[in-house]
Amino acid sequence: MLENYQIINEKGKPRFAVLDFKEFKKIQDLLTDSDKLEDFLDYMHIQKVKKKKEKTYTLEEVKKELKIGN
Image (tube, rainbow, N blue to C red):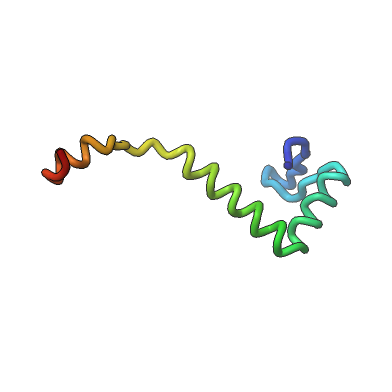
């Protein structure tokens, strides 16, 4: 979504965006349907979480740190 658009500047600052009418309709449909919008926002959140580079631990590492288990 929004891969193909054109920005029109006025006095060196972005003033308008021009996009394909099909793209406009997709966005309009998305923004007027709460279920679609909620699904899209969930998808965007998942993409953001996937990009995080957090340390992960194995079960064995956790057991060792907590001094539990075998």
